[in-house]
Amino acid sequence: MCGRYSQVYTVAQVEQQLQISLVGSSEIIPNYNLAPTQEAIVILNQAPHQLQAIRWGLIPYWSKDIQQGARLINARSESIVTKPSFRIPIRQRRCLVIADSFYEWRRSGQQKLPYRILRSNDELLVMAGIWDVAKINNEEYRTFSIITTAPNKEMEGIHNRMPVLLLGQDEQQAWLRDQALEDTLALLKTPPNDVLKHYRVSQRVNSVRSNGSELHQLVNDDPLTLF
Image 1 (tube, helix red, strand yellow):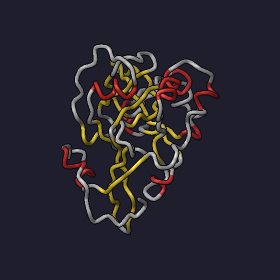
Image 2: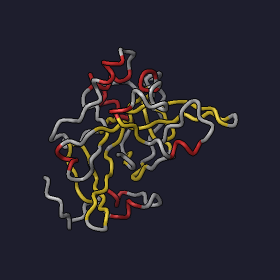
Image 3: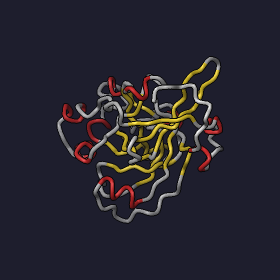
Image 4: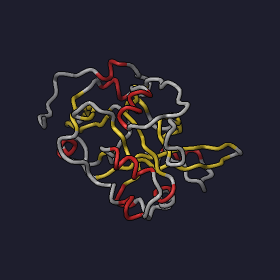
């Protein structure tokens, strides 16, 4: 799964990497420990030249319960077409979820040790997402989930799931455009090996109250030797 990530980048970085012009986008407030139910930066298929902040944790359009979003932070690629919460968004409402890195926890005995995972070339991560709009008690909620898949070589020693990554401009643009369902599903694949790197970070990241650049610092006593 993907349950925490880092949103530390500028509008200019997004424009340069995705080779798009972003209209009217405000400067991005750094978030070193972005957690479910918080607002996060995405690009929606309905507005492909605009950064928008919407809530992480998908609330289906038919839901009457805002708490459902806290449970739907990820969507498994293998069942996304048939799950009631996801089957319309995967066809009609897709988004790019942009991060500089994400965190994952590896079990070691009784402990869970946090790792920061990022692109091996230090580019931004562009994760495949779906979104929806729900009206609950006369208030509108725009929310999203991150799609996950089986791990590649770098991730399999840490966790058995990872985000679907859209690595190139062709994939990113295809994810946002109208197309046949089979073409969309073809993008939901495990990323190639060697596109990621990782290192252990402080357990301070475990608390959502922790949010600062120290969360990106390397912890040296790392027993993992997948590098």
